Image (cartoon, rainbow, N blue to C red; front, side, top):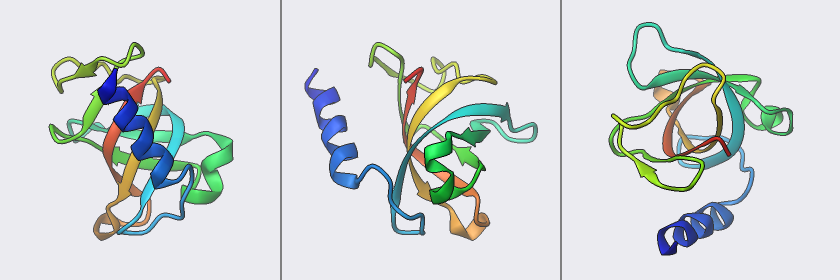
Length: 114
């Protein structure tokens, strides 16, 4: 439970919604539209309406072993345990990957089924 509290504080202090730039965090909700066909640990996210103004309607999200991933019961998952599939509902804390283009993000935290 303490770990969940720390994550909650990070999200609150980071700001619910912040403009996206290379140095800023973006916290949002969305649904996995489709997995990337040419890349592991990558998906296209259909952003929920209240966050479209911040990042756009669809973004590309990448994650790796440095990403902290949690299931609906808030248990931390490894990359091998994660089950992000088309249609998954996610809450994410992201950082812009501006070097790859405007709609590319790297996930720091992913909460599945939130």
